Image (cartoon, rainbow, N blue to C red):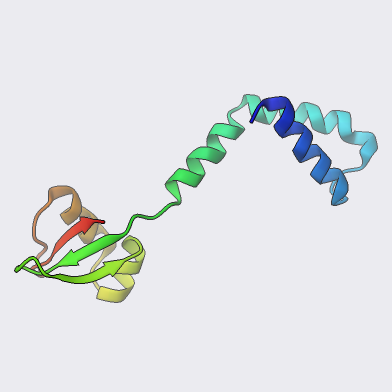
Length: 105
């Protein structure tokens, strides 16, 4: 989406929802253009990418799948193992102390 199009859409929505008085639209347009120039669109894209969670799979020593989790926090909550430990085992591709392998789906 181009700068002009994005700024116009945001400004239109702000006016329609009553967030901004139409007489201040020119000032708001300058502010929104400055936000865009500061990387607003890239920041929004990066936030979407980083908030996606990867599915994590848990295998026992015999390479049998014993669990599937929607991310580190989900795995931590359901298994009782610390998320940092799971993440560390994933990056090292090694067994955890508890005897499990962890892989991304």
